[in-house]
Image (cartoon, rainbow, N blue to C red; front, side, top):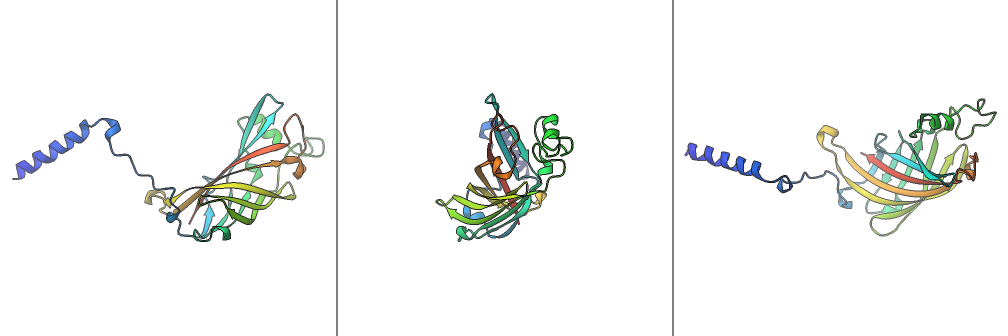
Length: 216
């Protein structure tokens, strides 16, 4: 009996190993598109996985993209009352990243080096901040998030077109916390915030593409 059991297990293992790669069971992702995976409450921004990509037109030759990261803040969310949601995040402009060390240095150049006023943010810029004022659901998985963006010492209203991306519990090796993620887009005019360098050669319009992750 024992011999038959061992032979049976061996045959099963060999059969599994012989399956083509495409026939192997696919790993199950911990996150899903199900709103039911959201328990609700107060979530903290995941600074390591929340990014804001910005894009401008460069001289009409090409688009140019950079990133802001290390974003902190909170999200208050009740999946049964999406219109009551609120978000408050802070973006450290000093953590600006581009693909060019020279351009990054230019955008963070000291005011004295720039001749008095910095061309873009200066060497020690105050963090930007977005605070929502109204959330308007657009179906089950999308919403328009109106809020106030403070950038370069100026506060202006901005509307984000946001979409639910996924939710669920992270694996134990990753902390086991509940995660919820969203994407969002918006277009702002940098001149509204007093950043006018090289307009229109470098576009006034700045497209924002946001990947926002929160944990609880």
